[in-house]
Amino acid sequence: MTGMNAIALRSGKFSAVSLFFILSIFLRPLQAQVTNRILFIFDDSYSMYAPWNSNIKIEVAKKVMGDFLDSLKNEPNLQLALRCYGHTTFFKPDRNCKDSKLEVPFAEAKANAQKIKQRIQKLEPLGTTPIAYSLGESVNDFTPCGNCRNIVILITDGIEECNGNPCEVSAMLQKKGIFLRPFVIGVGLDVKFADVFACMGKFYDVSNEANFKDVLKLVITEALSQTTVEVDLLDISKKPTETDVDMTFYEAGTEKVKYNYLHTINHRGNPDTLVLDPDLKYDLTVHTLPPVEKKDISITRGKHNVISLDAPQGYLKLDLDGAFNKYYPSTIVRKSNDMKTLNVQDFGKSEKYICGKYDLEVLTLPRIYIKGVEIKQSSTNSILIPTSGSVFFNKAGTGYGSVYTDDGKTVTWVCNFNPGLQNEIIYLQPGRYKLVFRLEFSKETIKTVEKNFEVKSGTPLTVKLF
Picture 1 (cartoon, one colour):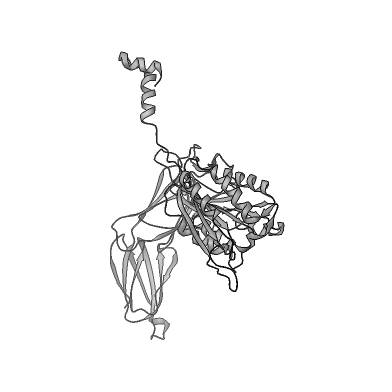
Picture 2: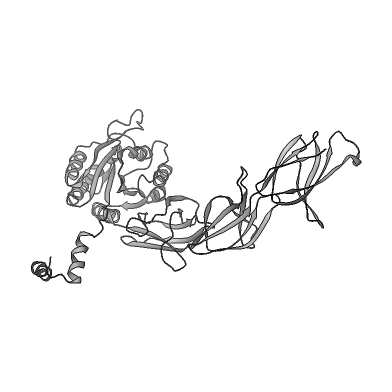
């Protein structure tokens, strides 16, 4: 507390500034701290015995990794784990394509950096290179955690040798949110293999020991960068108040789904923060009615990114006027002067739509068409139609016929009878109607039955066709 505010407290004199200062300390919202979890997947296959610079690959890797792990001991909010492959079974005469093991489970970096360093020093290259299998097994390494960023750093000197598909496994686990896009460090690999690993994660080529140290530092810097994203769905006043709608992030220019989220306003009243892979560009679809989209979105690493889309919405509510019966019609909703169906909305419920004008086709008998229904920001436009009446048509037998509206001047077709039913119920809007019917076994036109009847809202009616 500052001296000025301490004096104010002792003297019993509180200024507005002093009170605000005190309250700001005790009422400041707590921000959840993200824990970074890094799983090192370390190649200890037989090829790591190959000469590389002044030594063999495994010895260079042990030394560089040891120094690097020492630098992580005091990193806050960081957990480390180690999985190795190719280290338990000699690769001849048969490959062991399940030679992969979590050697050091996740724990705070302060303790685990030394454990991982010690375990790596004891490794002896023996087996093959089951990269896809190791990635798949990592699902169990990342134990459930509500506020963690899961990161994989794969260090390998070779490509997949067990007929697995590392790219497919990596993409599937990223889509499920198991980990972010992996970092792949190729130790003394041929440059031609860069494309093989590019589909799996972000690839770094290590050509020598000094380069190895620099790449590890670069990877850890990128991995720990707190890159966050906020999606602002703007209302008509350009304020980010719209929410509770699904969002899909695609890899830009493709149909590959990377993330699906339900947009949320957090307890502080702001759009909730997401963590996305900053190495990709995205296309975003927000599944409003109709959907809104934004293409080719770049994420700036190490910063809080805000993606804004205009998504002002209001409500359309469909209700029946009068006594309810078991018949609830649906309504086809289209953008004004556009025949493409946007939604089929049931009566008795409200639905959110992007602000604008819409045309409705109410699936009653007969159809009701309502054009230019306007949806305004945060308002509800209620559409009320009469409840249909139920008409029981009692026929002397099966036959053919139709129902028409009849206003005394014009007769307009509404629907046909079901020729396979002797009796049937049809729900009709209030109004005057005419029916025309002939029994199936009557082979004379003059036997046609014609009747007029009136339907009232919510009221049952029986009409005899004989």
